[in-house]
Amino acid sequence: MDQGEVVRELASALDVLTKRGGGLPDVSSITEVVDGIMRTMDGDLAAGNLKLYAEVESLASYIAEARSEIAALRPEEIREQHVPTANDELDAIIDATEQATNGILEAAEKIEAVAAGLTPEAAEALTDAVTKIYESCNFQDITGQRITKVVNALKHIETKVDRLMAAFGASAPARTDKPLAQPAADEDADKALLNGPQLPQEATTQDDIDRLFAGLK
Amino acid sequence: MAVDMNMPILIVDDYKTMLRIIRNLLKQLGFDNVDEASDGSAALVKLREKNFALIISDWNMEPMTGLQLLKEVRADVKLKETPFIMVTAESKSENVVAARAAGVSNYIVKPFNAATLKLKLQGVLGNF
Image (cartoon, rainbow over all chains, first blue to last red; front, side, top):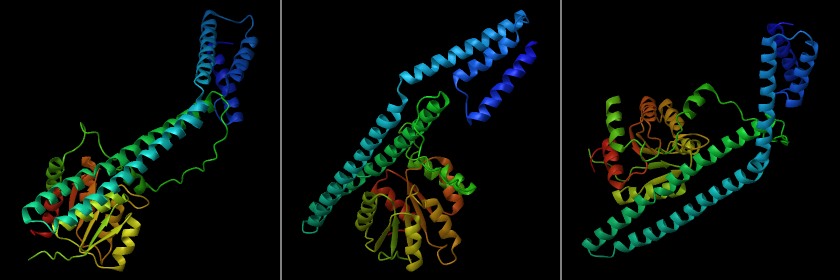
């Protein structure tokens, strides 16, 4: 059997395994296939074939090693414990900041109501200070949106961990999540525009927006 | 022409605190007739029930975003002339371009201050 035949034979056997298992074949199946092919080549190994065999063997060991390392990371803990805990903590931050902001706003509204009974100078000073409080309370919305971005990043990591577990044959319980409905094409385009708040060093200022907006008229 | 300070204004945001902040800032500017909605769909219902002279809306909301609301408003014969100000943390140029293309009247990036809100309102309504 020449090198081309070995490669074709190997590809064909892996294809059968993939179709049978509905995903990537596990390491033991790959090893079995390689061993089987090598047995049919007894007495027929040229130097090139031996090199190919060594490469395939090295690849199989690499996969086995990667699998052990991933198992040692305990990906099920990441998915079942760390990610949900982080999500809960982040939700709690959103709730707490919302409650605190509402408390601050309520107090500011009461202070503003008092201003009506003061001298014009005092009322103006008080109202200016209250305006600053209102402006500063913008933080709650921005913080909430930033946290939502982090939660989405964690969900992305969770999905990747699931895929790794499935690919390397780790014990991953079947996901019960229903598949997400596929959005229409224009919905996709709209969703692509939802980036949330930018980091300060990357953010576009109101002046930049005004210049751009004016240029579009 | 003088700006009608009693004009009905609809503010749309999924954050209650943001609705409260905008309402309070509008009140300081002299606008008292303010109604609220928590997303685009709820806003559209209110817009079809009552005539509003101005819409101030966030972008990032579910199920209907501010951009979708803007497109619905501009596509509706009865609503299409209503001034629409987007107040959003979406500050990328592609967002401004998309909103402008959809017919937004002005664009405020969060976090914003009272002076910016007044300036953008004047840009749409005239001086007050």
